Length: 289
Length: 351
Image 1 (cartoon, rainbow over the protein chains, first blue to last red):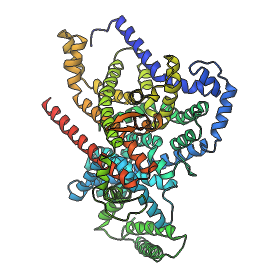
Image 2 (cartoon, each protein chain N blue to C red; image 1 turned 90 degrees about the vertical axis):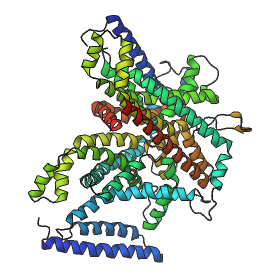
Image 3 (cartoon, chains in turn blue, brown; image 1 turned 45 degrees about the vertical axis):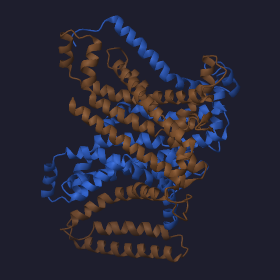
């Protein structure tokens, strides 16, 4: 627009923006400040700096990190392994499946598979969760490898649940890649798998970024699936499950709970600060497509 | 490498043979009940060998088909085991007396009849609908206003956008506990109230809505920002020249031009509000007393349908009943989504 907004309007807008930011960030401030306090100090003054000390923070941290129900490093490691492996597998398997579906889109079977994937996105997790657990228990018994209290089992489940969305987004992208590119490679004597891994897959980089961010946010924060599969008192726990188990074991000891919450949100915030632009872009792209 | 080379041929046959032998052997062990700890490994290795054998299979004509199958297999297999089979089993189990491990008989529509005789469940459904309606309006409104604010020319836009989006990064469980603390300790302190919002069903329900908006509005804002930035500059300039004020520009140009964005956001808020579980569990646990609903006292005043399904199955151990509720939940969600998509499609055509 060629007319500049008035200074006073800008000032008002700025003040409003600051106020909203303060409101939105206030809970984060509370988490940080109160993890520096002892429990009685929190109940006396939950907002201010009174009673906050670095020594208390260290002692809170010590109490949380080594707690039997929380075991921060174990939970963090489990969550990281599950998230990373699931994301890599989803990107690869999703790319492979989407490519095959896309390049056979004149054939009925490919359309049927695609339709089932799309339709399945409407299925809420609640309707499959109970039979899922029993199916996994039976399969685990059958193959004699535990599928329930194990990391591979959860990764398997995430590949199944994330598959539909991944194929959907990747398919939309692959459609736009000109087929001539592949044809040239076939004429040069490439096999289909070579065409995929050498030509198509590298081209998928930006859209794989999008699905990785979407799936990553979901898998890292997911509570219901791991809590059902791993159980709250199991050996293996993801971070959200560990938080839930920890809170369940401490009745309203807020200094401990908030320190645990702080530990649980730090990894996500660090990742966000590093890849802010990509994350925002990925979240928006995923919604629009 | 030549696809018909002898090396590939031999590798293929060896892999296929070994794979099939291992596969059959492990199945045999399983069916006959021979206790052997290696049978799972044997099965997995067998399947992998069969896949390798298929991949190396010396055929020019069918190599493409084989690749198609192998490329689709991993995702379709996991998808079938985690989604399709449990879905079909789940629908089947909802007509039985399934207890989470085994079933003895079919009971017809008994589970469905039972759940409609539970005032607590009816309450959950009504509450969920109320929650969905509130959130669809409020989250969209707040998200849109934030987006308008974040497309002005104020300084520090990057910071504001990032901080508004920040709550969306954090999982519902952690969020729920943080806000439980805020409502129980901080809000009471600030407003000098003796009682917590979470102690009363009505205010606790409002608390859930507030937390949900806090978490979700930033995400919706991002999508609206993208929509608003696609409104062509020359259209805005033309309206400015014609003397349109800010409010006219907003209602006559911006909002009609981002109709498709509004559709996306309504759909997102609708489905996610329906499925709300984590915050509900961590913030109130569904507790809250309702003195009289359909002639009964309820203690699940803030329990929405997703949490109700969970507590029915996991806490009360009524698996088949919980499953029947889940099937109903699925039907409601599917119907609402389809209607919603239909309506928005029609609107867009009219535009």
